[in-house]
Amino acid sequence: MEADEATSTSEVPEEFRPRIVAYCCNYCAYAAADLAGSMRLSYPPDVKVIRLPCSGKVEISYLLKALEEGADGVMVAGCMEGDCHFMEGNFRAKRKVRHAKRLLEEIGFDSQRLEMFNLSSAMAGRFAEIILEMTERIKKLGPTPLRKGVKD
Amino acid sequence: MIVGDRKPMDEILEMLEPYENILILGCGTCVTVCLSGGEREAAILAGQLRIWGKKEGKNLNIMEHTIQRQCEKEWVDEMRGHVEKADVVLSLACGVGVQLVAEMYEEKAIYPGLNTTFMGYPVVHGTWLENCRGCGNCVLAHTGGVCPITRCAKSLLNGPCGGSQDGKCEISKDTECAWQVIYERLKKKDQLDWMNSYQPPRDWSTAGDGGPRKSVKIEEVID
Ligand code: SF4
Ligand code: SF4
Image 1: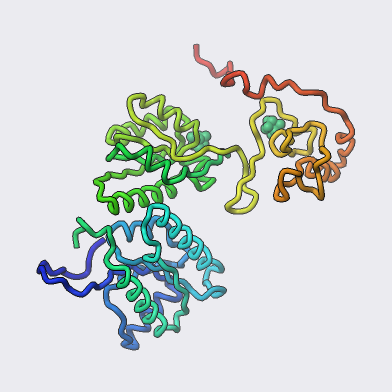
Image 2: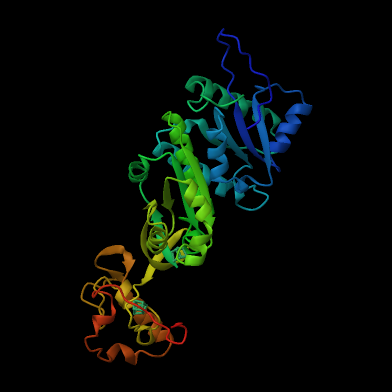
């Protein structure tokens, strides 16, 4: 995964800024993120948003890949339940995230680093809040144990 | 199709323990359709193993590759290059595929990633039901197309037994009584008289207890 910033090589420990990969549905979370930007709402900057045509398109292997490549946290954001543009894509995403959590637990990896959220395209404030929530959660967990040896 | 389930992770990790270059080999036919050993599942397992390896500080090289069928020599031969780069192959095919891969790469460690469970079809998305045991002497013509050998817990040919209650088998409330299903099916086909006909003890010699069975299509054999 390409990083978006140069990381300092100094020995002084810096504040931990969790890197989060957010798989966002085009019809809700992605639009909400866009709106949050236009509204100049601030939220933690170390989030990489990846646009999906629907949250249901997310594959378990994408979620594992992001973690494997050194993301501190991974989230999937889909439409409110019952409001999926493709009927039930967000329910599929929910099942996939649940299963991916089981797969992570199976290998002794903390599944709290992965989460699913639901919101609508109008919820710019909620988008910022979700990012903050996830960032706070990951801060408590600390940096991913998989980053050793990963190039920034 | 042939149905399987991925082996427990502990067992997989134990098998792979001595190796660093690991090839996860998916199969593109039955186990792809039953969502246990296709390209997708190979990618998931490879991802899990990479995460596990990094977490444990191991220097693993996990490769993934999926071929159309692991039960045919031509396909298995085509992946020679991938196999050569690996110390071990974890095959996600059914037991048939694993055995052919093992036969064609005799010097390589070839392990099964799945427990092959049965032949069956999906009843609802995500759930498969066993419905044929390959007994070599098919009785479906008499039973409305429902297999009593597989779906009756006692493989009765003259069912139902006294344990059939409210359409369920006495072994579990979740299991339909095969003979109830047969009865309903025959009724729809207007063939209920089959229920009253006596089926003599069958010849089980075709069913596979005498070592591996062979099927020879003489017209195809090149001598
Ligand atoms: S190896 Fe097994 S799973 Fe793969 S195609 Fe052959 S029978 Fe089906
Ligand atoms: S009778 Fe034998 S061959 Fe026919 S479906 Fe049952 S197990 Fe399969």
